[in-house]
Length: 134
Length: 502
Image: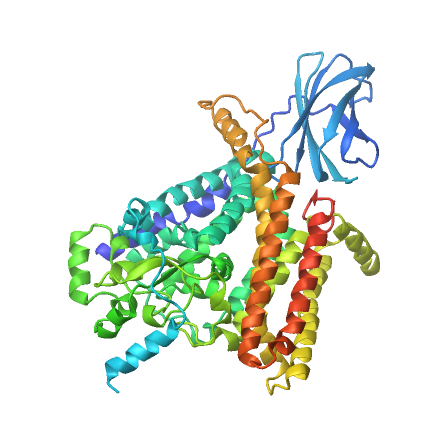
């Protein structure tokens, strides 16, 4: 009887190891999914050191989105590295530019956090793979 | 000669070159007192189990950005770095505190395994295959950059230990399956601490051999009544290491079961010469003679060449090779390219290099040993160098990124609405990579010198009159591998670790 009780406890606990991971999902916090975001790095291909990140925001019709406030955060895809942060300035309509210092070669990604002129908040992740070492 | 004298002689042979232990960690106040307690292991496992739960939770439900997720950060930066550093300065304490074994103990409380591990699998071949599979999965799934798969790896590890040890008696998972355990066993041959008998004369008089058999049934029953937790029951070594015949750290998880079981308080955690066991000839309890075991030699080879391969995946020249292979094969599929690289690095290259070194030794010494036997014998001399490469690689990540845990933890707490540590301060990082490079060179050179010493010690036994004839080719091989490792470290780091970028 005691053996049976223990077995039932085990049966109750064991599936949780499967259910917890498979039942989870992550919700997106991007408040402007219709906005198209492009990131270009200069130099191209991107190289370790000081460079420029240019972000272009367009609406669903391809029109430039002016007046947004943009923050960029660059990370390596390997844990344990210090991120780089930059505020982007709008140089041309819908085109925002920031100076970034890529500290190591390898795969990077940029998190773009923008508040659009209409108040919506846009959050995107854009990969910048293969940053070359000098 | 009496039976006692026979035993005394046999036991003394095992530690012929060892005097009384210079230092015994278990004799220390504080740390020693803690480790002597029966609940000490449990006391280390429970926090690590809770930490594992946090890692799995954050891996599945936290941000899917590796630098901001506790699962990827703590697993691939902190755990690996601390593991090799603790192995270098102390011993196999991570196996001692292994959280994967707690669920298995609970499972055993329920199931009581009745099977013994199959005789055909009582070798390291399965563990070698799993070790290679783990290295392959690391590259293929980009584990360092994916919290989701890292969390799954942790869950799979818990499940593996649970299933194996729920079905099979003794520490089957640790001894025959666990790839991390095998890594720790090999690396701990270079550790300064060893679980060992304090006074072999005491073992000669011992009739009960509790260190391997466990305490008498009457005492175990009394324990069960006194202690609510069966996890704390005394038992003999589950890895079949009989203390008086045990040599070194291979297959020892530092569980200290023997320490608690010995009724004479005759087992300690003592200092010894790191690496000396790699050239030890005599048969040892639970292992036989490693120098004649091809499965253990294969593990040593994968350990060493795998270290170079793992580091190679982090530097820029790998991308030239990947592009060339991709062009030759006409595919950008990662699996076949990885498979070829793994086959070349872990099979072709070792067979050629060790075969050549063994051929030279055979030719120079005139030994009757076959090439595979010679390669098996001298493969252990590569372990110090292999450990040096792992140390250099993992210490780099740990030392340059140790403090990033602060903002990642701040961020994790802030995200669940409990910002008790404040907002993330991403200025926390670690040492500058230039400073760590000096340490990396030191680890590699220490490993090279250790490898030379092991090869020379083996050669002195094989060719006492002119040992250089036996060791020359191995010293040259080790030096070439060391130079290759230096070249790897000197390359610009490109932290991708994947052979085919997207």
